[in-house]
Length: 317
Image (cartoon, rainbow, N blue to C red):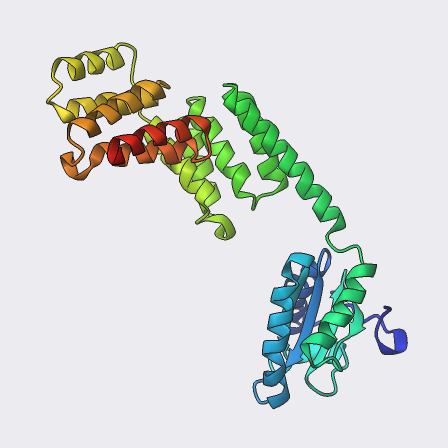
């Protein structure tokens, strides 16, 4: 399916002679429509608040865009009253006017397709012809391979090398939560705590991934590993916990230090023993600490799965 009527190329480009408001309008259009259209089909809907048919069409467009989101279709709406310059560039004479945009150009006029089935029929034809997400899909696959490589290297204990790979991926894909989380975990495990804190702060400043569970996991690990005990301190804490088993605070301090020192089996054994002795101590602090460790290591980790089974048997067996 080719360009719209009259074969006009209505791409909006910045050029000399635009005033400040027009340049701002072009910048908004580039960000909201042109850039997404580089890898997706953008349904571009020209509408206005006073337009009854526009409001009737909106839920249809929204549903179709949602149904086709995983195929690379997004919806962008342009209010003709607020964006008169953009509407004039597209020679919008009546509304609703709806185009399909790809790589900065209109590739189909969807204005006459008012029903869900009509819109989907046109989109199916477009998606069969256009290389939607092609290069991006390959890039995502490559990034996933790098992250998997770094995960494996980190699991083998080479935290510095893993941090280098994660860092490269963060530069390539600054909104990839897995790369950011991996970088924080690798820096933490290599003892570069201040760098890990800085990397976590940078990741949490990226709005699109700020609440991602992978960052929460990285933070949990950083909180647990930040206070690694000095030489001899762990042994002293171990001796005190063993000598005074009724001193739950001492036992918890030892478990925390053991995990921070990389002795997670020792930490888990101590916490499980504390739960067995008094699961309600300090409002379940030992169980809460063990769950925090699970989150830091990763709930899919084989060690976590095995240790969770031990906890379940203890609590429900």
